[in-house]
Length: 187
Image (cartoon, rainbow, N blue to C red; front, side):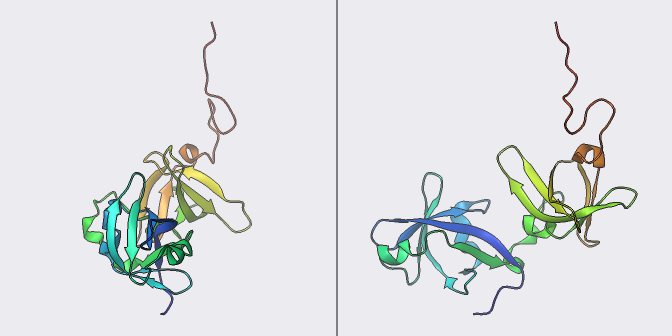
């Protein structure tokens, strides 16, 4: 098996489920039960996994892969990340303002004047909304909100996204800014 050219993380295998080789899988797809619809899944070490059966459970899907037939083999997969090639993701289903996280990584973040703030090195969702991680040469990584106020424009063909430095937290404004509380009234 050759390495994937543009891998996209689709799922992480968790604990074994039962005795027949099934595993609990955290799927990162919009519809977790559609994990097998994207073709075979690949691990970083080159193994290929074909989904034979999939069913939804409480917060995960339970999957049976071809060749994983007992609990011992299933337990050995715990923590394994599964990827597909980016070309296997269907672009036709995306709305104009929707993007795959993988397409955002590597884009240069610039303001309207062209000043660079680094490139997108990761996209995270810790529960309160999506965040973009930006890293520039000699700079520490920073997180900015991935909102319509801080990210004004995304141009995949040009390889850049236009940000508002104030909304992204790079520039302090007069009333409030990074490290300053919002004005409040006291009684």
